[in-house]
Image (cartoon, rainbow, N blue to C red):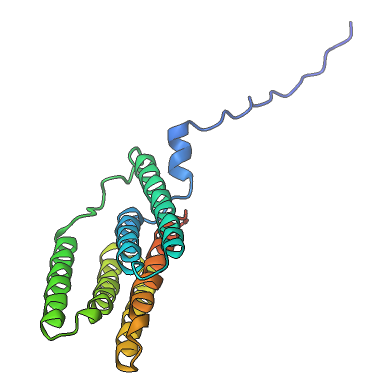
Length: 205
């Protein structure tokens, strides 16, 4: 009788990982990026709304449409990222809104309202937008330290320089360029940052 050769056992095909496991290994935006993107996007849209009033009707409509679409994309991506983090093992290990965060917010609010009020009282209300850009830009240096995100420092530097450019335009003098240099340009920068901040990364950066 013919003997049937032994056939080595084969492992069953590996089943795909569950959705919750797949979400934990999928590259995610850096922790803290969602709140930073929402803050930056909100400031950016406000900058565009306030500082595009001197544009032509068509020009302002184009600026606002781009700004609204960008902010809508930021909202969608940020809340989608929050949803994916909810079931991850590290969710809740870091406090997004600690004491340092609220101190930064309080100092920023005082600087914004106090500085613009002072400039208006001195007879230079047109410098208010430049001052706002400097304060908003500077506060991202602090947020970058709190959240441990170096990319916040890049945003802070660009927006702060836009504010300084607004002050320079005043002293040249070329005050008509202040809303563009210190308002519209940093508005688009903030919105672009909001989208970039939500890009998936393998490590914080």
